[in-house]
Image 1: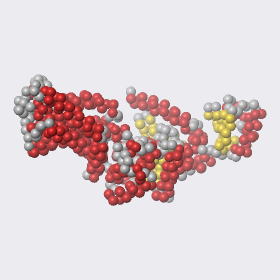
Image 2: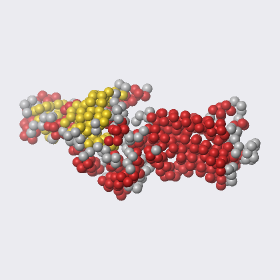
Image 3: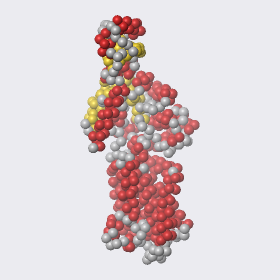
Image 4: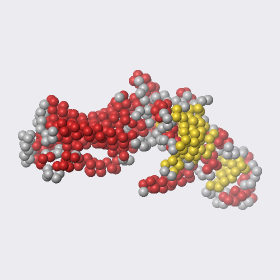
Length: 249
Length: 328
């Protein structure tokens, strides 16, 4: 555990020092929230949560913030590879699993912190969380999204030599995952043939889980959400650990 | 003297490229041992295998009596390593980089603090210990890496091209550190270098490595003595004529390299006038003539028939071809 803590601690120190990154990654979900939320609030009619589109969008933006931060944190291993720091870690008498777990928890922590900031900011624009229990449920889903997608980032980083493929992953994997997740619109409003695709997206269950926690309403049973995103987390962690073990420098 | 490192028939292949070709030697405890050779000769690959970062294709080695394949963690605990490329976290301070390392090697908190303070003082970085590494110069980073490599009190320290890219003053400074480390702490140091002067100044013994093979291994003095006295370099438009003229029995060797002839002989100062007279009577033109005491560069030349720089140029072409092959 001390090694996991060491790696986690380094991640935290780097995170706290990177003010531009903190602000930069809050900006996008926040702008989405302001522009889309207030722009479409009067146009979009939703059944369920009192027809309030902003309230619908906030859980989606929290999930978005967690998603992007965690994938990015995982992929950062490529930088450690390029700047040589990974060697220092890998040549120490510690197991790769400890390093990977530390890195995953570090990334997940930063991601959850980023998501929480969106949540706090949304309280300022008049959003009310349904209940303390609901908040804890939402937090649980944020943690699962954070862990699974950091592990996903580590898995990708383990197979990539440099950052040139990063944009490709972002545009063709992460953004579609986000777009299909129902973070921006209710799944039920999609054409019938798109819905199965949405249900294949693990993030959908994360978003719905957070939405259930924060607003008390969701289109997918929260237990199903928990089971799916939980299994996804386990699969990603195992995959990430497996690929990280095979890194050759 | 006890053996710190024992290497037996160690070989590493990358597809068709044999990076390290069946090398065997022992390094004694407390030695500063140099692996000297051009870039791409197999020095770093050898170090990677000894530090368990890379598995050998065949052969075996022990570090402090521990087998590098059977007990990776055992080896890792007993060695310190400073990589050729920088491996610091630039976003952290000097202290934090040290602390991270200490925690990875599970050094208890109080001992860790004490050692970090000591070592940062040793490498003269205590004034800058709470500054972010990004603001450090190349020499400071290198010193920090050496300090970090010593934090867990390794009995063997690997230094891969420790002074690469540093200015002469910093290089001198580092040499002094390294020499005093071996002397005072009794650490065995294995360093790789392609700087002849570095190997000559620092190492108690040097292995010259080229194309993955050890081509010579001895003390720098013995290696230099072995090539037959002093070296006279004669530059001439007709090098073949120079060699044909110089047939005196006191000449150990005369070889042509480009437009130069390299002549080995004992007591060059006494014979230099004879050489000039001989060349003049045979009407062989001379552009310039220089005498110097043999260096490891001359040793390398005498074993490989090439200067280390020519070798490096060859290796670069090879590596480029190799990389192209791998990519396509």
